[in-house]
Image 1 (tube, rainbow, N blue to C red):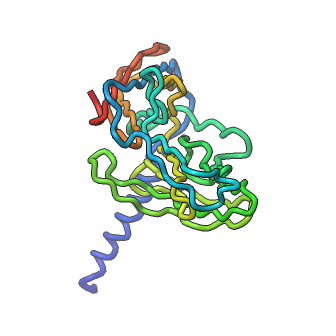
Image 2 (image 1 turned 30 degrees about the vertical axis):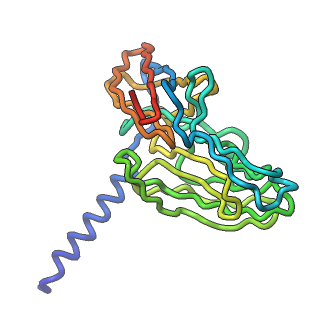
Amino acid sequence: MKPGLPTALLISVLTIMTSSTAFAAYKAGDVADGGTIKGKLTFDGELPGDAVEKIAITKNPDVCGEGYREVIWVDVADGALRGAFVFLDKIKEGKAWPAPEGDGYMVNQEGCRFTPWAQIVERGDITIRNSDKGVLHNINTREMIGVEKGRVVKRTMFNFGQPDPGDIEKKIKPRRSPYISLNCEAHNFMFGFMLAPEHPYAAVVDESGSFSIDNVPPGTYKLKAWHPSLGVQTAEVTVEAKGTIESNFVFTKTGSE
């Protein structure tokens, strides 16, 4: 027997097992006596000095606008924190993903903005649309690794130019992290964010900072709130059968209170 053969076989087996485990991490099915998690994200205290950034518009002013674009990194209204995500961490089984609205998951580049600014997507197909006639957009979609440790490394999933209006189909395939950032390499004032968890128990907060996650199997979970500029908070929640639990998060300019 060749000395290297057992090692090679072992590596092959481990690779297959690891791949199978990754794809089988979440099992979708019927949920009996599911409960609901509701809550609100608020911001307390003084806003960070860089909460709003003014960036000069130097390209395509007829479509993008003239002067400056105000990029609102921390959006707060009457104490409500907007543009944030809430999700359950590492839930292994539960409800199936709902069908996305319209024709599927999409990032629309219109008026030199990514629409929506924040969205939840299932891993897989996504449409990248250029709605701006005569404008070259260049979307760079990157997996954000190390968000929860505060040491972010970005891995590009796809980066391409769209010189003409129309749709291009791509796939969202993060390897290690559900956190995703968008920017346009042709317009340095275009940004957006996505969350691509392995399961559908996730929500983008509404204009009041509120969220609701339903049909959760009874049990105890870690609930996480992610704001792209302020970081991640975690709370432990216990969901009773057919019950409703409230879990709120308070952020400050240093991240959490």
